[in-house]
Length: 157
Image 1 (cartoon, rainbow, N blue to C red):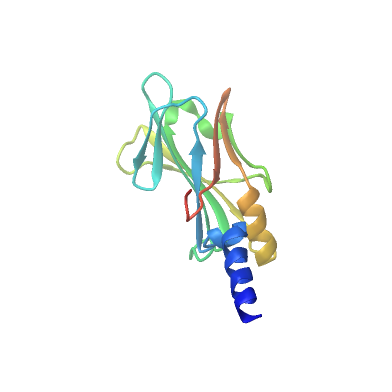
Image 2: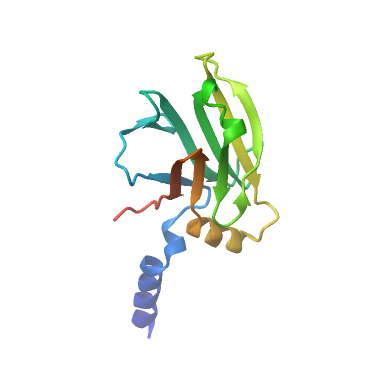
């Protein structure tokens, strides 16, 4: 009986999706249907945008972040001329529209701006929150352009 229980728990561990994620931080991966050139630049995906310009996107859930604990955080860095805060939006398939939190000048390049969208999930039960995050798709839209992100598993196939 003991052996059967051990096998059952091992099977449960590898088959249960939520065990493949550490909810301390759940990073999101860019779905790249158009095979755009994407490079990693620190915590950001550097994606070919318009006329050789680049857009930098960082997307994730942070349980223990000091400023906004248990929050979805999306940071977008791009040139000011695109007026993202006027024409862009960030939406979660599980939580709806994610609110614009801050817009700042980029410290390294004054032509660029850091745009932060943050949504607190602190009021949602821990188990429900994690399950919904793992089913989530974040969509970042600017006009007709769309950038979609999904949770990244710790154990990749």
